[in-house]
Image 1 (cartoon, rainbow, N blue to C red):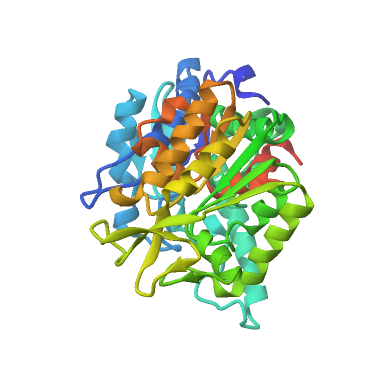
Image 2 (image 1 turned 90 degrees about the horizontal axis):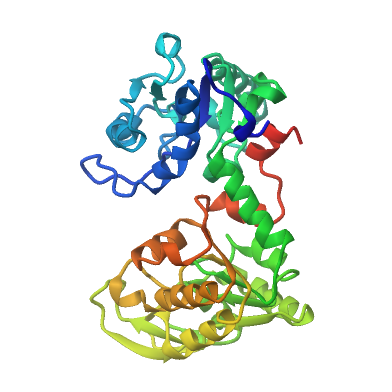
Length: 416
């Protein structure tokens, strides 16, 4: 069922949103992007004359109640955004009374789903190597089904609108869909946009296609890098993984971050890029610091000749130009992961250069997709969110989708 074709009049809709938003030390929301992203779906339910039950996780409480991760802290911000006084159920697994009392046009938020281990469906307090683990896992699977069934009992229909968790087979993102027939479960507007954006990048490629993969570790990106090597024309690898590639080629990297057990993987990526005719763009110079802080002393260095006691913190001027040249003429662009320690203003220049090049290419007709927490934070920090085609709310989900994996949260709705 498509959300546009569904009439929520007189119905209670339980909507899986991703309200795992950043909070300050006083529990105030510091970035409400994810809340705003869910508004079209939530407002559609209310405008039709339905009532909405929002469910989400926050943080990683590992099946235990933790006041610092309580969704009660964001109720006021959600109410402000939604324009409705949102009610709150302090126990997501025992919210029958609150759900039953909901009237048309009203909204309810359930407490953090992950206060129950059943949400993630992983046995707690038992090691995977323990002989009893298998039985514990099977038992937890049944408990997860019961938990999902309970959540489903609050509503007449289910809407999955949390792309950031769509790659997890959790109670609220996939298992719950089993308790609704095909006519009463659907993707929300945000999910539809995310799925379409990924399809646009992978199925409707306009060339040249440039992908930019940043971040500290090759290991977390190897699957997507290998998948992209069969699709892209230019692949920029930047951020901390630069130094793993540099060391693999015999460079001196000082105190820079490096995965010593992935040096052979780095060389293999270089070999595959060559075999596939992909222009692999690696940094040649970097801004180095003598301390991991914004106020460190800095200098420009070759990525293969960093002095001891110094570490690579950002892409250097020559590297930024290489990046720009690989981006400016692209017609399809994917960016995941920064070029340096962008949180420190003095080391944000490389990431900003990438953002500016993407904005320029987008203005010239490219389709640009930005995804992953750090890249989104980057583009927002530089005030360029409106200069790219699409910003994805999902990090891991986006990467798995681009890697070609089926997302459980999508498959559960589509019956795949």
